[in-house]
Image: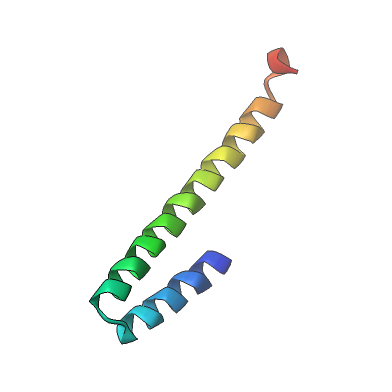
Length: 56
């Protein structure tokens, strides 16, 4: 939910920004999306490891 809000805010800012700022905002949006995806992957990895009795 927070990421969606942040993405929308960055989109709104980019509508009013010059080229350099839009490029920075675009890359920031990509970074947020990649970070969110990695967080989901790591949460899945933690869940999987917690069920592996050999690694307890």
